[in-house]
Image (cartoon, rainbow, N blue to C red; front, top):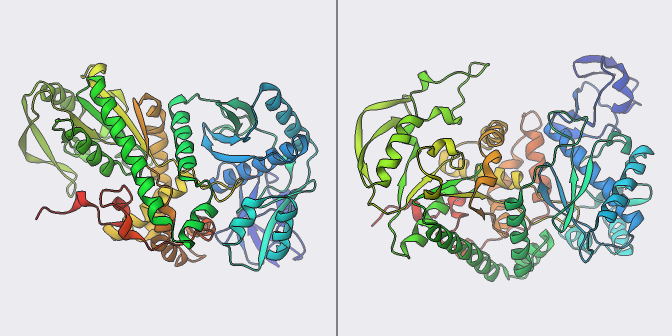
Length: 548
């Protein structure tokens, strides 16, 4: 049989695994963690396929990084099982290029972290195989019962399949939705440290995978995650099985009301913070599909309750003509860079608006990529707030002519805290992508594949222009709604199933489908408030309706 791996044609007997072919590559398969075959992510221990055009996955690839993270997580769980058998471990969320891990009812000390790190290093040094086990659902249920993994038992009851895949390291078996590295010896680069009340498992650096990523302290972000954890405790909903139970038992309606009330309370708190600060310019920034527009409307209403009359300044009017912008090395335009805005004109207008003066605002024509010839007068009552929403809101270059004490910055992002179970998290980036897929399809006529093709570029822009400034915020708002996946599945799931193996987006679609398979669909949209952030993505938002 014949196949191509990384463009190298090979003849095989059909008995080989992908890992057996690595030494035939010019670089010996350096850094390989898995393999991509016909749009599917496969283990290096999977059997080869005839006529396949395959590519090894390394830490330079998104799927390779996910394999590494998943596998390192399993190494941590193995170390914890050896040292502290019977103790619960919860993989909470991503944080600072790592994973934030909680040991409930355990006070994390330096000694505990040092012991776990040393045990992980021993497991890596032993280069133990990470075995893939296929068993019946009944066998999996028996195993989870014997080992007291009640969270797995509950989520398993919602997965209607007759088989289950587990992984094993040195006798410890666990479930993960995704492929693993072939052995622990591939996972030598990591770090472990105490962080807040938990533990941070630091991943390899994206730019230099031969060393762990440098830790960046993000106290505001960690506090926002802690607040989200408290919300989940109030809602009594930590894992997908908790959400599914409410859907099945028809208790989701009250849950939605409480979830929305918690967000409304936080918006009121931010409004109070802004008023107390004495600032006049309110800057709102966050990554794609955070719900920035709806949040800005709701915060504006919260300020009006206090007698203020906020006015929004549109940054769209301050775009420079596209033919005047510098090109990227590949000839493309980066329209998200701050230099795409007329910072000089904005810097002249903002202080004048704060003083109550009238300015002549330009008008940008997105069809031609140029400014229109005319302008329109614009003014704000003296002492009234000015709201500016945009990706550069937390970058002081945008408002360099405004004194710091007159600026109040808000960072908004849907920080998903609902996980499938204790050891399988739902990524914030995947939840945001679902939001964007649904919104783009419903309101922009964009097929899901087009949205997914653009996603890598969107993520690069966020890494450049948003995330480096998030700690500059005076307040953070978590726009994730714990119930939203039960609603979003109805919209996204059928679209994702239409994406076939020959699509470049198949791997991404398959990944989203995998975790949505564990979520029960809810049909309670009439309970979702018309001002909910979720309405920005599924429709029916009061802020986009014309006045009667």
